[in-house]
Length: 113
Length: 113
Image (tube, rainbow over all chains, first blue to last red; front, top):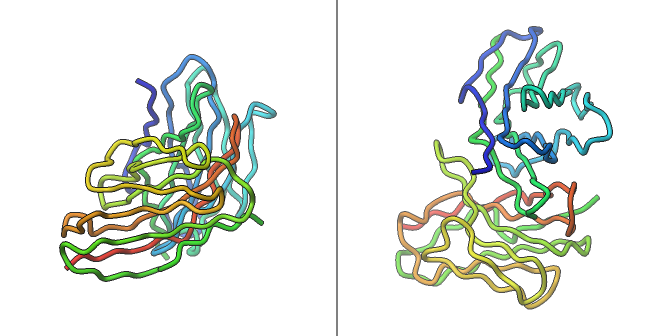
């Protein structure tokens, strides 16, 4: 079955440290990939998306993600965490045969002062 | 910017009531979706619609119905609200076709008492 897996339901980093949120998808055919962020009591906001134009995708708020076909991964990174990055992050995939996006279970990012 | 508007941010209803959650988008998107979000369960798809008057069941349609009489509006109906339907409800829309991500509304937090 097609799926997306986010490793780690909760990640905590210090302010200024590297942020790394992991995402793996299950398909031999590269899908379209997305990262969304959700702040408390709000809807989801698109951070970035991969649509096969470039393997390194830059998004808003200094985040970027790299598509690695050999690892079926699309990990989200940010060089230096800020307190305002505390939120829940969702990886999502859209396979070519469907219009429904499949969401990962989410990773809650906490930032320590 | 595409806007997806959900009519209420917070809603409190009584058990057994018929509840309508409204969602309107202003960018002529063909596809619309209703999710519910619960702690530890991520986003679960309730219903979606590919176009006007079309609807498809998602993963958890029981206890819900939907209506899409106009392209811009997608309504979620709780036929007889129950306490286990207390949740955050998220509406989303997207253009038909590959590579397009969702645009989400701000969510409706429904409490059934």
